[in-house]
Length: 63
Image (tube, rainbow, N blue to C red):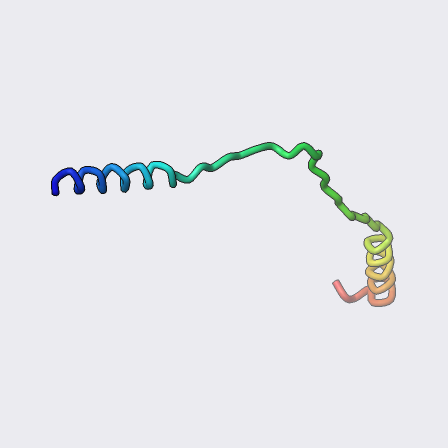
């Protein structure tokens, strides 16, 4: 009876040891690609400055 318990415990330990999780971190063989779709448009600022300048010229008592 004791022999069966020892055998069962050994089999359980072996089963648990075989199921240990393995985490692997491997680098990709492809290069990292970052796409930046950036468009800088300065005409918006110039147009706003001109509109503000026209408003100030049209209303000199505003400030």
